[in-house]
Length: 184
View 1 (cartoon, rainbow, N blue to C red):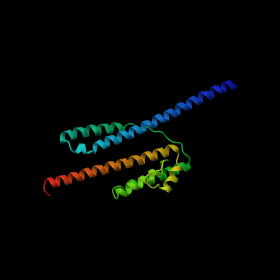
View 2: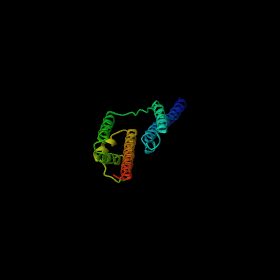
View 3: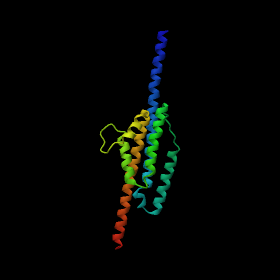
View 4: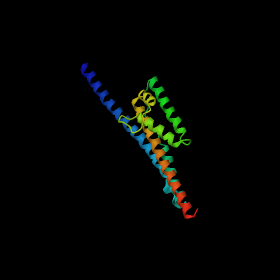
C-alpha cells in the first residue's frame, strides 16, 4: 500500500513540474505576443514610415496592419489564483496605473515621472528615482505573478512614452529644419 502511495505521489510530483513548465511557457508566449504588438505599433508610428513615399508607406502599413491583426487573434491566458486581498490589491494597482496613463496627454513629463516612481516600487535594486511607498505596499500585497505583470506593464508604458518623446523631438527638429530651409 505504501509502495502504491509512493508511486502516485511521485507521479503527481512529475505532473506538478510539467504544469509549472506549461505555465512558464504560456507566460513567455504572452510576453512574446505583447512584444510583437509593441514592435508592430512602433514600426507603424516610426519616423521611417513617415519619410518614405506614399505607395511604399501604404504597402508597409497594410502589411503591418495585417500582422497586427493576426497577432491580436492569438489569445493566451494564464490565470493567477488569488485570495480576496490579492484581488483587491491588483485592482488598486491597476487603477493607479490606469489613472496615470489616462493623464499622459495632459502632462507627459509628470506622468512619466509618476510611472517611474511606480516602477521603482517594483524593483529590488536601488532605483535612480524616488519610490512610491504607497504603491509599493499595494504591489507587495499582490500575488507574485501579478507583481511581475505590473512591473512589465509599467516598463512597457515608460518605453512607449520614451519612444513618443523621441518621435516628437524628431518632428520638432524637422519643423525647425523645414522653416530654416524656407527662410522663415
